[in-house]
Amino acid sequence: MSPDYDLTQYQNPLFTVDSVLFTILQDSLKVLLVKRANAPFKGRWGLPGGFVDVELDDNTDMSALRKIKEKTSVAPQYLEQLQAFSGINRDPRGFSVTLVYYALISPQQVATQIDSVDDVRWVDLSEIPDLAVAFDHKHIIEKAKARLQQKALYSMIPVYCLPDQFTIGQLKTAIEAIISKPIQRKSLVRRIEASNMFEALDEKVKSGGRLAQLYKLKPDVDIVHFERNLSLG
Image (cartoon, rainbow, N blue to C red; front, side, top):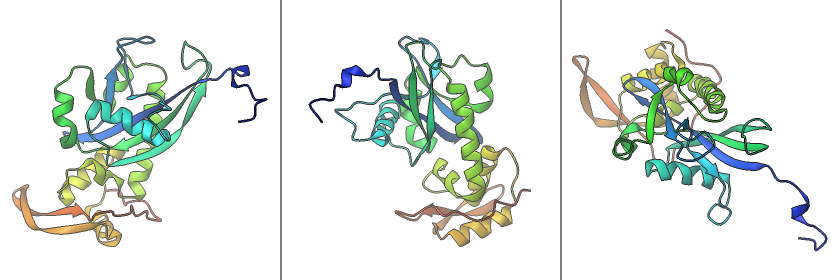
């Protein structure tokens, strides 16, 4: 840094990282919220996040993962940057910027951790409008939900909300919970085959009175994106 450069000459904005962590629980799309223990908005629900720790975090991805792990003890299976939100009225402490991520995780991975505390819980998306939520996090959740719904139509990312082993029916239910619309099973089956992301297991489970094939993700697989959206039912 140049000896003529004085960082204290500039008023820096508050900078945080927040994550919208989604899962499918009881066939419904849920988001993880944390009850704030400190001002501002003490006692309100908010997204897991906080200030970047320059001594611990090499980048904002690490900040997001660190904050999620603090509340769930595990790393999400899928994490992607959403966008930055900024403004003078976001935070009563001053001009603030938050870089937001959205993430997907299987509820089975974090069930024990979440069930053991009363300041973290999965919230149904339908509850958000009537919930006391901090900052502009309601708006952020809506933006993240819209992005997830869009990607669920042309990619296979909803699989990251499922257990390690799953059926086509479970994946179909997850996609429909995300987009709030029915999809054609045959269209989904074609996508599963075309993506080459999944491995059929030598095991079946009872589902609706019949035996359903179990699948799992192949290791280190890349997410396949399709040119067209899934066909709706």
